[in-house]
Image (cartoon, rainbow, N blue to C red; front, side):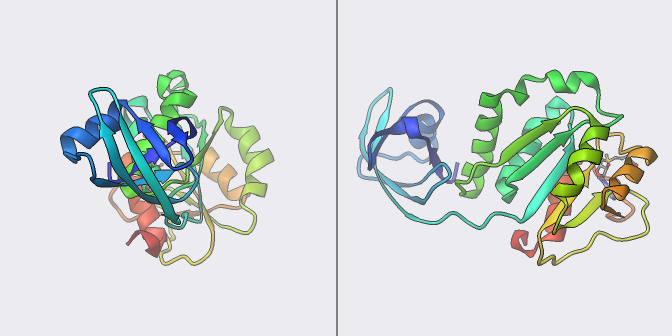
Amino acid sequence: MNLALLFEEDFVAPDRVRIRGRRLDHLKTVLKADKGHRIPVGKVNGLMGHGEVLSLTATDAELQVTLDQPPPPALPLTLILAMPRPKMFRRVLQTCASLGVKDLWLINSYKVEKSFWQTPWLSEDNLRDNLTLGLEQSKDTMMPRVHTRKLFKPFVEDELPALLTGKRALVAHPGMAAPCPSHLKTPAALCIGPEGGFTDYEVRKLEEAGCQSVHLGPRILRVETAVPVLISRLFDACL
Ligand code: SAM
């Protein structure tokens, strides 16, 4: 936690917060903060700054906060991801939040197992908690928006074309002729497949919607590796 993300419910006054639980534990055990110490904080979807510890008890800490700096710029990326296996999903969420992805679409695909959609990690609270961990890691405050689409064809035919307007649209698929571009200066949309990959039919549908198929070299990467590698390849902001 390189920044403590603060939520509306943490504020006991306009410039004062009370934190408990995980953030309190971190304050005590990792930062070893004491009264008078300053720690980096940020208000969700707002400014960042510091919090000065006013009091520290077994159950909570009260901080006086000064919020005066903007968060880092968002990545101009719409990430469209075939719903990952639950074990991987949490980590991928955190990685996306850390890298500055603000618009994440979780879609179905032939090789996404039905059970993946039942994961408790998709609940609103769990999404928020994992995205918070990612934001706190990279010192950002802007909470990503997550959309789920459990039917591939209606999403690709009815929604995707509009979503791609004004963007460099790509689908990452091993073995394609074109290499993944780099140093993008324009907004982009990137589709990443499931563990078993997109089917040929799905790649064709994504292409019909306006995506260019690109490869990332001969090594086939796990989804959790492909996500950060593709994103950092596309945007210099991640270098
Ligand atoms: N056997 C699957 C295939 O050939 O498509 C492998 C899927 S890979 C584990 C999961 C996803 O990561 C892929 O659908 C793709 O979007 C992305 N990916 C991984 N390695 C890639 C590479 N070398 N080139 C392009 N995309 C890659």
